[in-house]
Length: 310
Image (cartoon, rainbow, N blue to C red; front, side, top):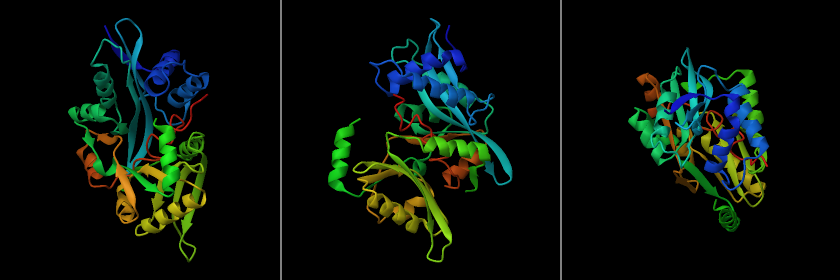
């Protein structure tokens, strides 16, 4: 009989193989560096909580046939401290004989002790599973935005690839770890950390993105004080253009949407951001665009995005 249990160190080779077959090149074995990183990220790093563990699905034959990667995000809602859990890599062996393995993994994850659960990479099937389990999709957090800078270079790049009130409450150690991980994305290029100041010298915003000349730059985080989002976005676009980027791509946050209108920004929806909580007040905070999520407070800061480990 199949079962679900917390991830153990001995499971890492099988999980790495499943990750390789699901998200990378299934015709090759997983590189050793991928195994090392998965062990560190999910079992040893500072963004984990033993009470809110990553989970594996064990098939009736005894093999690992599914996995859901989980990291924790300390948050604060007013004066209330919260434990948020981020559901990252949800994957099931395509040849598994158990069609409900993914649903059971997600149900077990959502039944954990966390106050609120998120994912920002839910595909159509995953989104359907979340909503059946009383999760809610967040359209205003679910769009990728694209700003073309050099159309011809952008087309070449795309052709070659084919392929707030509720906010984070990181410790200094956790934030340092996240920023260090976020700076290491060789597939995306050089990490650019920049601050934006007003003419008087006052700090009004900041951004973090990765860029390589002639390629699509990947924006991980944009921060702006109220009323300053337009100026910060303009500085981001200008900086990327000076560095030779073909375009910019990032994940939306509600506070930036109005500033992007009128700046020739296009929007797509490759995946949904979803939220689940037994506390209706927390879900409503995100439905009313009062929560801070995506970017550094999400999934894409880690090196599973932007590094091949080869």
